[in-house]
Image 1 (cartoon, one colour):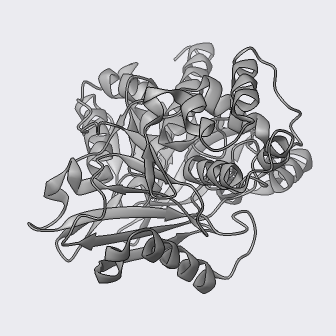
Image 2 (cartoon, one colour):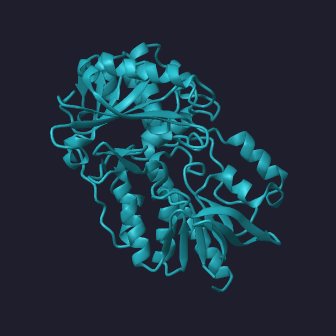
Image 3 (cartoon, one colour):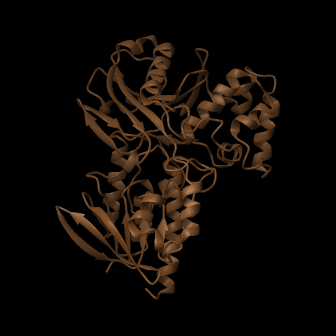
Length: 430
C-alpha cells in the first residue's frame, strides 16, 4: 500500500512526488516512457543533446524550493542578459528600462500601455473574454507592437494574441515575475528532472519508467489503486490516493467517465484548449548572434523566440558547433493547422532574420500538438486541480493557476496538490 501514486514523471508529477516524499510519505511515480521530464525532456541526436520542448528552468521560486526539499541542487547556468528583444535588427535589453524602454521607441502609446501593467498589479484587469489582441487594439494599431505582443504570447503560452485572454497575459507579466531569473541545464533539460527523480529516490520514493497505467480503480467514490503494465505484465498497485500528471482528459479515460459525472466531463470538454508549437533544433559553425539568453522577436511570420544553448552550456554540442533552439507558434495554435506550411513559414523567418541559418545543420523539427501539445490547455482555460473523486487530483499544465505558464506553473500546481493530498491523508488518520 502506497500513500500516493503519481501518474506521469513530467514537471508537475515529479514536483508533486518530491513534496510528498519530503513530508515522509510512501510514494511511487509511474511513467510510460523510458525517461523522466515529459515534454521538458531531452534526447541525443548525432552527438548533440537536444531538448524536446522546454529549456528554461526558473530560479528563485517554487521549482527551486521543491528541489531543496529533496536536497538536490539546481544544475543550471544563468545567461546574462537573460532575455532581450530583437526588433528590426536591433537588440533591446528590457532589464535596463522595462516596458517603457521596450515600447518607447515603437509607439506613442507606450506610456498608456505601461500604465495598464501598473493597473494590473493593483488588480485592475480586463474581462476574461477579451483577448490580448483586442485589449492592445484599444491603445495602439502599431503593427510592430502587435507583432511583439503576439510573440510574447507565443513564447510563454504557445498561443497567439487573439487566442490568449488579456487578463492571463497581464497577470503573468505584471505579477508573476515573468522569467526574471532562469537557466539552462548543461546536460539538457532532462538533467534537471533526473536530479529531481534521484532526490525522490534518495528520500525513499520510487520512480518506475516504462510502466504504463492501464486503469485507475475507483470504488464508492474513492481511488483504491491502479493497474499498470511493465515488461508485458500487468500488476495492481494499491494506493491511498492518486495524483495524475497525465492531463484531465486522459485521467478520465483511465478511470471511466461514469465516476466523474456528466457535469465534470462536460466542463472538461468545453474548457480545455490544447495549444501547439513547433520546436526547431539546429546547429551552426558560425555564431548567428552574440547573445547568451533568449531572444524574443518583433515582426515575424511564426518564429517567436530563440536561444543559443551552447553559449552557456557548450557541452551540449560537439566541439566547434553552436546549438540553437527556436520556437514557432502556428496560426491557429488552438485548433487545426497545416503542419507543413507552418513549418516552412517558421524556417523562412529564420532565414530572413539570420542569413547564416541557410548553412545550419538541422537536428530536429518537432510539432507539439494533439496528444503531445505544448500546453495541455492554454492559460486562462484550465480545469480545477480537484476532481469529483475525493482522493484523485490533477497536476500540471492543464490545471495551472490563472495566468501562469511554463514548467514553473507545473511546480506551483504541484505545491497546491501536495498540500491537498497531505490534508486528505491527515483526515484519514494516516
